[in-house]
Each structure stands twice: as structure tokens, then as C-alpha cells.
Length: 433
Image 1 (cartoon, rainbow, N blue to C red):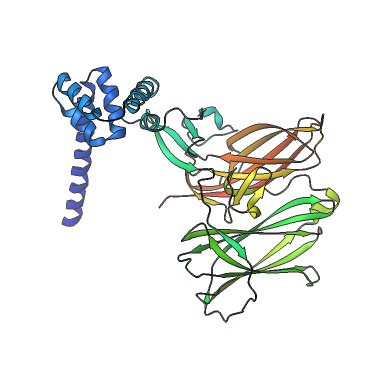
Image 2: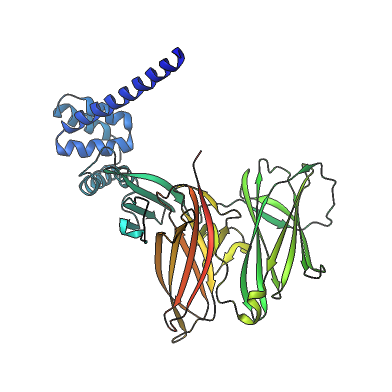
């Protein structure tokens, strides 16, 4: 009981001290002249210790002298850029909660974003909305390959997520290599891996089956993985077998991704996927049943929806390439809350006008736990591209959606014919550690 009381007292003292320090900072900040406030906010981005020293000086003369000394010997162009960015950030984002708004230091650091998306509460619609939607912004810096997600909490916008894209993003993956012989081993331990599939129409009576794999590797040194995939038809006859040697590429440890593609007649199949770690004498096996009958005679007019960790114009390996760029699929549709991710799908048999198709995609997100229809998020985009097949990629920002299971419905409306296609997938948002 005494220990519990001491703990409660310690927590209260900690919270009180934190509250006092915030109040002291605010009181000292608001005694500054407006120009000094701008400079303080900018200095906090460059050098937090220098900013506090600046704030604690007693007179405007001392602060002016300190600021000049801070920049003495530094690049004059950098100082000019700093002051221009600080001025703009304060004017645009410093009216309500300048000490708490994360957009100010982000703007001072990177300057104006290539693209700034402002999301209003009207983004989420539905028959009954049980979730409070906060205003949000998405800042994209194309040159740096950075995306920042901000959500307004109380009066300030807080940076809740940062994601990367582009050629500088290296995706750890398994690379096929050629060896003279493949030696089987007697495994002494189980190798865990994740596997899922995507189904796409290739051409008349031929379906492209994509098998996505991921494997957690702690040490890639001298590591070889044998990937053995066997595909059986409904008569239990082997249709195709593919055995390859793989090595980890673009990483020393972590989650490594892999993809294998097959072209099959529209029937039912059983997949047997086996991975063997020759170094650590481990092996794992998964069995997946696949139905491709819907693709018979080009009847299927929309493919599966593939959740992905990344879709961009970078290059990892040709096996990840799609018409929209590289697509690194999620083998488990599960991401931590706030984390942006992607979706990929294809729509077929579209009407064209002047050789171009025109479609409107609507991505509707439903809370799976709600027992009646409730749309909690909607994304809409128009596409105008050549040909009668639409290759569709969407970047999704869950923003402040809480942990839980969600359903994504993709509706593709052919604006030339008026016909609509739809497909469904699910994903989970998990609590952060």
C-alpha cells in the first residue's frame, strides 16, 4: 500500500513538473516581441539548446546580439532561407498553437511541400458516424521521397506518421540465383514465413497467379533459401513445379519480400509452398487453395485488391514491377495505426473513346465491427489512360482511425459505358508497441 502511494505521488509530481515547465515556456515565449517569437520557433528546429538560451535572455538587446552571434560564420544564404521559411511558417501555422504545431518545424526544415493535401472532417461519411474525425494534412516532398501525416489534436497539428518512397528506398527482397545443383537437407527446426496470393487476368482463358512471400531474417551472412512451389489441379495432378535458390538482397536483416508468378488456366488448384533455410537447417511449408474459375472466358472484370507496403516509381526487382511502378505487396494485410499503405487492382473490358478509357475509382472503408453499413472513409479519383485495362494504384492514409478490422470496397465506374465493377479486401490496424 505504501509503495502504491509513493508511486501515485511520483506520477503526480512528474505531471506537475511537466505542466509547470510547459507553462514557464509559454509565459516566456509570449513576453517576446512578435519577430522574436518567429526566430525562437525557427531556432527550436535548428538547435533546441540555443533556442532555450535565446528564450531565457532578459532583454531584446541581448536576444538580438545572441541571434547575430548564432549566425556568425555561417552561410548567409542558409540564414536568408531560414528566415524566409520561419516567417512563412509563423504566418501560416502559428496563429493558434505555435509552440505545439508540428507543421512549423517541418516547414522550417524542408520548406514548402511538393504537394499539400488538406483533409476536412467531411472526408468520412455514412449513415451513422461513431468516430470523431479530426482535420488532417498530408505533406509530400517528392525530391526527398518523404510524406508526413498531420492530424489536428486540440488546437495544434501533430505529425503522427512519416513514410518514404522513391529510388532511395531499398526494399529487402529475395533474389533468384543460378547454382549447378540444389542439395536437399534434413531440417531440424521450423521456418516461419507468410504467404498470400493475387489473381489477375493475363489474356483469354489464362490467369496470372502471383504468389507473395515474406520472411523475417536476423542474419543474412552466407544464407541461402530454397523456394519450392508445386501447383496441383483438382485431380491432384502436378501441373507445374518451380524450385529456385534465393539469396537476401538489399538488407542485412529484417523482413525480406519475394514474389513468384505463374500463368494458369481458369481452374481450381492447390499450392504447396516450401521454404528451406540451408544455413540454419530450417524448413517451413504452407498450403493454399486457389479458385480461378471466375476468370473463365474473360468473365472476371476486376482483379483482386492487393494491399501493399509501397507503390512508387523506384526499382527493386523486375518481379515486383507493374504498369504503375514497383508494387511491394503486404503478405499480411496488417499495419500499425497511422501508417500509410497502398492498394493495387486491375479493371478489365473497359469501353474506350478515342483509344482511351476513363474511370472513376471510389475506395470505401468500413469498420468491420459495426454490424450495419457505415462508411468511415472515402477516397475518390478519376483516371484517363490508353487501352481497355485500368491499372489502379491508391495510396491510403488511415490517419487517426483506431485499431481494429476494416473492409475496403473498391468501386470502378466506367465513365464511358456507365458500368461499375467492385472488389473487396480486408485489413487490420494494430496498436503500436
